[in-house]
Length: 263
Image (tube, rainbow, N blue to C red; front, side):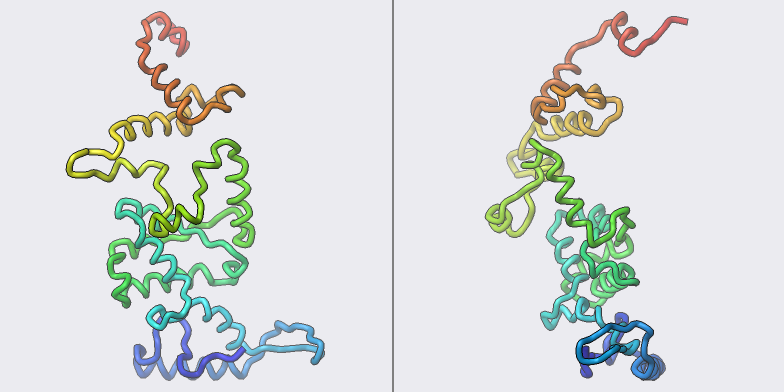
């Protein structure tokens, strides 16, 4: 692999952005890296053993961090462009839960480099200046699954949802029609308002509250559902929960329900 001579840099600063001292230190370091070979080797049909320099090995991932202004591929820029497409209310939470998937993400130091690149792009590129407020919130949390298995794990989890899988899927036509955005199905629709209506769906917030309670709350009667209840759709669960809350319990059955005893 040959490193392009016109732009030979590591880290975040390009040629012309370094001080004279930094430039000299970089040149000396590059020279040492060229002259030193690693212990890493590979068998090859034409040669018995192929050795590479430190520079060749260290620069292999530079192809992932090109200059966005020159239409070169850059993983950090792709992540930031995706965040820009989100609603303002969703950007902070999303920026704190970035997930890297794929075998290339297992290269040592890759996660740190992606974070550094994102912060650099926000500081120096006008395209991403809008994200200045979330720059210090960017996080790539550790995951219990290795990056090269993440895509498979995600697909496996979605496939295990059975009848609920449609809620997590979208077609290519729908994605393109919505301006390359995923449809909102999980709790932000009520944030949008028109001049004539406070909500797109006046009942959305109320129903969404009970949907979350039915699915996630440990105090919900659905935390230990029967087999028949597990087969119920989300709408049926919400309706049942609403009927359950409409009934006003008397003092006698309230005590028996929560196993309360008089002192």
